[in-house]
Image 1 (cartoon, rainbow, N blue to C red):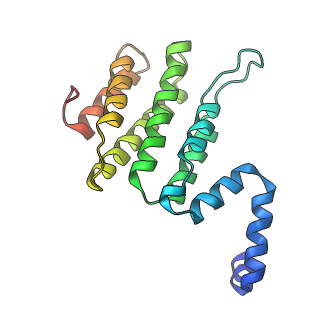
Image 2 (tube, helix red, strand yellow):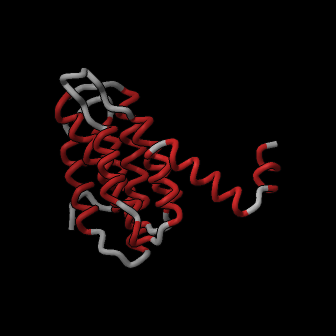
Length: 176
């Protein structure tokens, strides 16, 4: 029903609908602007800031990280651009921010580590896709290697899985 209604809207009605959506939340505004922007106009730092906020801990508020929010932001980025370097950069940022949580809190829980493993694997895929687009991935790869090295001392099989993913995607155990 909604699809049929959407297809029947005139251009002016669609524009008004998009404007209304943008006014509902900053997230909608960021997403719509990113989707409609040229690749060089996508505000990577805003996405990184949102990831940092989602993957942080506020001692005063006893507010924990929000992996679902981080995943939602990462999906937005994937929909907003086909530039693998932008997507890889934000995914690697998420991996690094997630690693800060493990450094701060040590042993967390299995769900957390499974989510971070998934983000790490997706980050690796986007880094390699970025390389195929002709981008220099050395700094991204270095960041992922650092996370892999740090993860070796973490339980729940997390360190083993991150090392496995590193080897699977980058075919070696050391950085070049």
